[in-house]
Length: 214
Ligand SMILES: O=C[C@H](O)COP(=O)(O)O
Image (cartoon, rainbow, N blue to C red; front, top):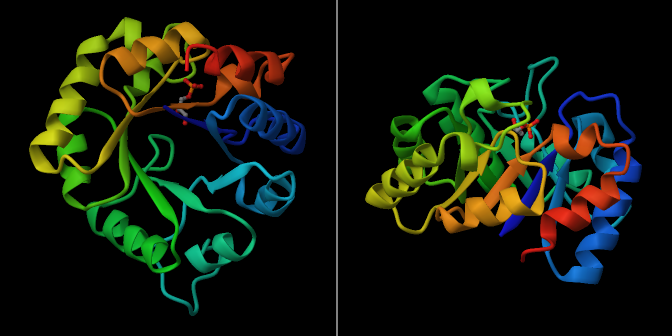
């Protein structure tokens, strides 16, 4: 199971979270990655943790002020990127262009989607993984794996019907090892989470709990 921690724009210390994640990953052998805001990728990567971007723009090099080019995040230490997060939706053509840009820079990719139909469409674009997240459960207290287990199993089936080689993650409300185990039991290959770690008083303790069933 891949534990992918998205720090969004939370008012947390990304380097402290990253250092804790690096320690827990090294001690346990669990795969944990941290996705900070673009401006903090370099500082997070310096901790040694696997570092991801939250987004890359669907642009070539050129006159695109305010964009985040895939090459820029790769050169500052990211090894992967989220795309089409529920809080940063893209048009289909833009997801495709962002994917192409990320892949040309050697970045691993996870395309997020709201539901199994979108998961099937995202899988057809051939990312490394897709992540199903019901928007109404994001940032909540109940894990998608217990609040809406069918959406996870349906997403696994939808992705598998298009391409068995694309991993399926789930996210929303995941904050404990029990949630991770439940997601795994539903067929997920990884989890995408944010508030459970970014807003925790003790992110390291949460990370240790998250990987405890693995
Ligand atoms: O990217 C992470 C997801 O949106 C889940 O967020 P959450 O763990 O705060 O529910």
